[in-house]
Image 1 (cartoon, rainbow, N blue to C red):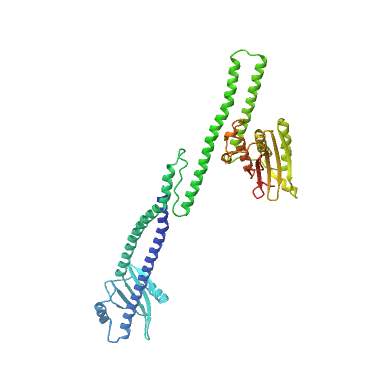
Image 2 (tube, rainbow, N blue to C red):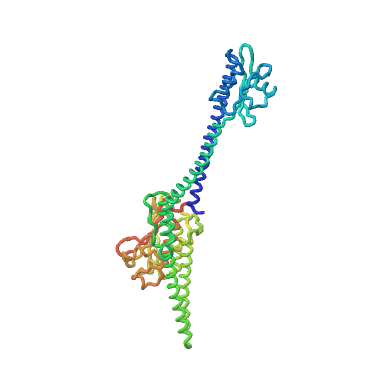
Length: 460
C-alpha cells in the first residue's frame, strides 16, 4: 500500500469515529428530548382531563368526551382514562383505543406516580390525582407519530451526512497527502536517476528546512560518502592493479631471460637475489594493501590497550634501527608532562608501530643522509610526535594529496615506493583519535606531525 493511501486511511480512521460519536450524541439527545417532551404533553392532557371532570360542575363525562373530540391539540390515537379509588373506570375519552390495565398496574401507579411505560407501540403515563373527596388514577397514552417521524428524518439525515462528510474527508485527505508527499515523490524520482555512473548528482533541497529538507540533506550527505567510497575503491583497485603488476612483470621478465640460455652459477645467484628482493617488495605491498583494506571497513574491531607513548616510541626506534642498518633514527623527548599518567594512552601497539614505521621509512627514503629525527612533545592540551628529515620540500600543489592512496608526486617518482604508506598512516592515526599533517619545521627540513588532542584522544 502506498504511503499516500495509508495516510488517507489513517486520516479517515481518525475522523470517522469522531464524526460517528458526534452524530450519535446528537441523535441520542434529540431522542431523549422527544421522549421527555411527549410524556410532558401526555401528563398535561391527563391533568387537564381530570380537572375538567372533578372541578367543573357543569361538565359530566358525556360532555367532556364531546369536548375532547372537538379539541385540535389531541395527540395521535390518544386515550385518557380516569379511575377512582375503587379502581372503577370513571371516564375514557377514546373508546377505540384500549390498554391492558389490571389491578397490579393500578397499584404500581399509586406507588410510583408518575410512571412511564410503553404498551403495544403506545407511550403511556400513569399518575395519581387527589382532591378533597376522592383519589384518582389517570392513565394517558398516545403515539408520537410526529415526533418519531422527525426523529426518523434526523436519523436518515445524519446517516447521509456521515457518508457525505466521510467522502469529502477522504478526498481532502487524498489531496492533502498528495501535496504533502509531493516533495518526497520528487526525491524518489530524482534518486531513481542516480546510479554508480552519476554519483556526483545531488537532490534539490526544498524551500523549507523541515523534516523533508533534513531528509534531503541527509541523503545528499550519504551520496557524498558513497561517491567518496566509490572514488577510493576505483583508485584503490586501479592503484593496486598497477602496483602489483610492476613487480610481477619484473619477476616474470627476469625468470624468462634466465631461462633463455644456460647461465653461470653466479648469474643464477644474482637473478635469484634480484627476484627475492622483488618478492619482498611485493610481500610488503600486499601487506600494506591488506591492512589498508581492513582499516577502511567501518565495522572494524580494534583492541586498544593502555600504553605509555614514550615507551612505544622508544621500542619502535630501537627495532627500526636494528632492521634498517643503512638508515639512522634519532629519538628525543622535548617536552614531558608533570603527571606521567598523561603519557598513557589507549592504543593498538601493532597498528601505531606500523604507522610510525611508515613515517620513518618515508623520511629516510627522501632524506639524502637516510636520517630521521623523532621528537615527542607531551603538552597539557595535546601529544605531538614529529618525524623530521632534511629531504626536499614537498611542492605546494602536492600537499593536499599526499595522504591519498597510491598518489605519488612527480618529485617522488625516482624513489621506490607505492603511494600507500602515508594513506595507511592517516587511517591508523585517525582510528586512534589523532591527526597527521605535513608541517614546515625550518628551512631545509620536512616535518610530519602526529597530534593527539586531549579532548579526542583514546585515554584510559
